Length: 413
Ligand code: PLP
Image 1 (cartoon, helix red, strand yellow):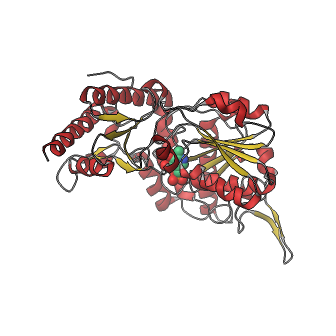
Image 2 (cartoon, helix red, strand yellow):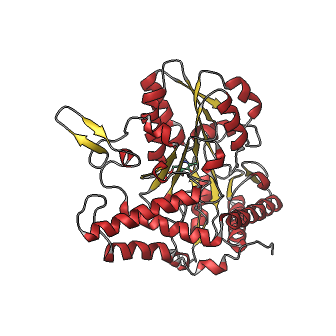
Image 3 (tube, protein in one colour):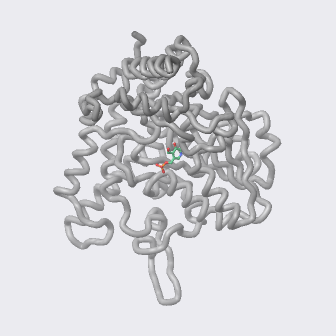
């Protein structure tokens, strides 16, 4: 058996769901972590405790219970600030998730800064959440969307970057880690080049903050977006980190309660950061749950989690290579995180996922919200296994053995 710096058996007991069986009595092998992760008991308990003991609306009560909830909600902001190394706590905006965070920037920053003829530079490996809002922003403003291509190996082709970047480039929005290829992108060199033409940079960190250390004070980007549910936290909470001076110069995204300083019959005056971008009742309990998730991840350490996922990815690559008849998408494990997408020759990815489901193995099949990427790869769909800290080498073996069984079954037919 290969070895890892992290022993997942130490943590699996914290995740009750990992002990459930499928309707056919097979133990769950959960390999769909890029879609959403599971929650440890500590996170579930934080949610229960809040509803049972500390729950009221935030920032608007003059009673002790609201003060207590407000403290917990704001402590969650502090936890995010520490996690990503933000200089100022008001730069951390709670949203519903990565999708909303990117939409906030595309709408609000786009309205303030995009003009006809400007260019928005994305990559061919983006999730739809980092494509569609920019198409919408382009349609509203007359700007144009362009793409950094990928190579056949599934890494960004940066040889074209100098040509693509110009004084017209106002936004470079790039994923830190591809949710299909697993590719870890060289953010620093992309950001340095983007900055040399004066572009603003957004990093889609949905697949990186949960798995790899990320320090916004050193990164050089202007916006970073991620989701709580992909890092052991609840659904319904995400984060937009942005540079305070940029956030200050942008109009509010949503209007309503909490985001105003004053409202008159003639108009309104927006509140200070972060309230300006947190209209209405925010995701109070999900944010408090996210705080517990961050504490849990902190205790293990993101570097160890990344190394563990890398070991699982390496093992999957080796086992699939031995098996044969499987096309692995993306580069060698050294350039990847814990995402292994593949196509079994002659078998539709949905059939693979369905046959694996019969064995209790949960993977994802389809375009994974990355249709342009699949088109570039010459396929319409793929199967994807994605790992987290609680996955084991045995999980990977189950996966590959089940794929082998699928090949044998379909060959017999
Ligand atoms: N960006 C990437 C790279 C993703 O993998 C995902 C989710 O799969 C998203 C954005 C969207 O995240 P959410 O659905 O949590 O808003």
